[in-house]
Length: 381
Image 1 (tube, rainbow, N blue to C red):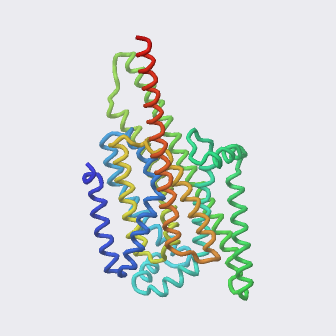
Image 2 (image 1 turned 180 degrees about the vertical axis):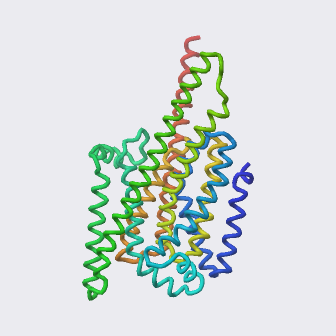
Image 3 (image 1 turned 120 degrees about the vertical axis):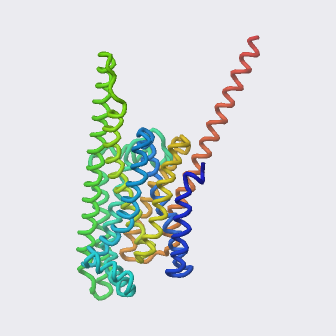
């Protein structure tokens, strides 16, 4: 079962790591491995959301999502999108950007390094909004209750996450300008670039969130309409075709899933720039990670274990928040790649262990309750 579900992911991993060694030696091997783990850890919540929707779809539409969807996810967002970011940031054509990445790596590195403040501001703001909207929402299940309860109360204030994100962006822009001035003022104009790029990240998040919400509303309306039509057909003695009902609802589910997947892929792509500026290594690492996210989605659906580890989504979002702050800090300071790659893994592992402990405590409580019931029955006899 495990090999059947993750077989393609294992094959892509082997090919990707071998390609990394041939491309840049063992150092490239390590970077691709870190990028793969980073993508998996950041996108785990994506797999959870995908699985929750995918399990409602027919086998046909599940295959569509796992075939056409994987092409969009891996080749579209993980391969094409980094080129677009570099091309826009460095004011290059896409073909020129790819050509530089493959033939003149030093020049490409210089262009990307020069564009790093805008990339970091754009990505940092996008990730920060994902994190803030998560922690300010009141949830039934809380991981770090001492922190999440007061934040949920603060979240009742309208547009609080946007205000906080803009304040952090303003501080980041001012900090970068001060840093540039102390070094002769040669990059003072980058402060404005940081501000504009950060606002662009905020706008992108709001557009993607709006599209996701639109498709979610359309999906709910479609499901409600089809449910009413089924009830009317049953009362009339003429049941509707299950294929038509499943097809229309599944089509909106597919569109919604693709928008969600695109929105979640931004964090992995943007976060990869905190690990490396090499577009080839980035594509290899993110492609491997995306394959595992797809396989993990299928595994969660088939095994029915979606709700077993309830804190994993929390851990994933805290990892997103940590990466957002790391990106913003890298506008001024360099941060070791190992730290950037390991923070998310540590938070995911911590949330997984917390989930395991919670499950054990619940099982122990149920066992004690069962023993008490047996004792009462025995006493009664």
